[in-house]
Length: 182
Image (tube, rainbow, N blue to C red; front, side, top):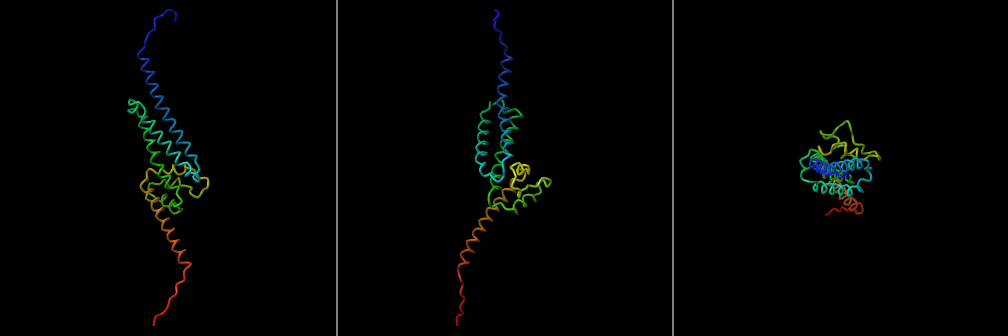
């Protein structure tokens, strides 16, 4: 153009490549945070319908994160992204456990009695408009082992209750005749 020789600017090429790499990192970072925020609006009453989609999303994020160029893995934003994705991956089983039919009022109260639980933000487990945000605000990851134990106990209690109801059902229909022997 205008008869001027084409001039290469190697620094400019490097900057462009760096911006392209950073765009991939921050694009994924933004996507993960937006997804995480959108999950918080899920109604707790329908959370079981969402768990598979949540799991699939986290797996896709993990794959996308692993595909990022190696130079980005040294950036603090990458470590933050990795931490967020790992937290999402760890909280899904807790959400799944708490959404089971075996979780009763006594189990929610037991969780809220844990020392790590923020007493200022109780979980509105009886509210029909409870959202995933209410549960996630409880910082379940800080008490992960205790929550898993409570969920396991709840499953065992439900199994015992069902077995007891079967036994009661069986013996309700029976008559026991006591005969004295001479």
